[in-house]
Image (cartoon, rainbow, N blue to C red):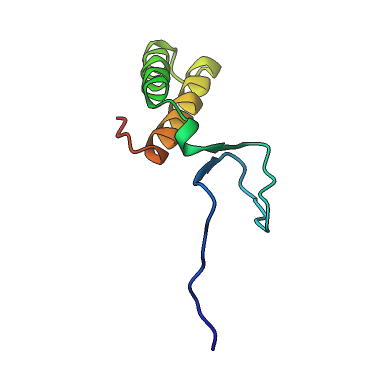
Length: 85
C-alpha cells in the first residue's frame, strides 16, 4: 500500500536559492544548517540595515541595498525563530 508519509532524516537548512533538487544527498552551495545561524548576528544585521534604510535618500540605491539586507536578515530570523520588525 502507498504511504504519503515522507521521512526526512537530515537537519533543517536555510536555503538561499529558489531551486533545489533533493535526492540522497543535498547539493546546494547556498544552504546553511539552521543550528549554524547566529541569531544575535541576524538581529544585529537587521537593525543595522534598518538604520541604513531609514537614513538613506528615498528611492536611492543605498536604500534599496539596505532593504534587501533587511529582508535577508528577516528571512534568516524567521528560520531561527526570531521576530524582527
